[in-house]
Length: 105
Image: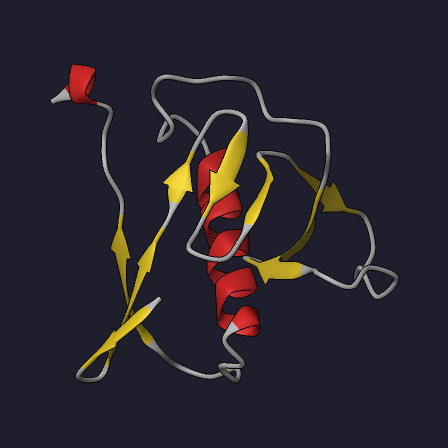
């Protein structure tokens, strides 16, 4: 993660098998929790629902914008990276550095 002026620049590689950032790598899988998720250490609360990482990968996709799966995984990556850098909760301006495979350009 880089800081430039008042922005945080974060690279996220949303792969079909793993999600990678500058300091994190985790399986491209999550589960929606039925409760609040208080029993988990890493929980994303988004749009009234609770999510946690899982070893069960989401299905492989060429179009990762087709549903919410990779949005949830990207939000989890952002949260893990902010935690890694001891950035407290609040409002932050984040620029995502993402890319496409050369075949898609």
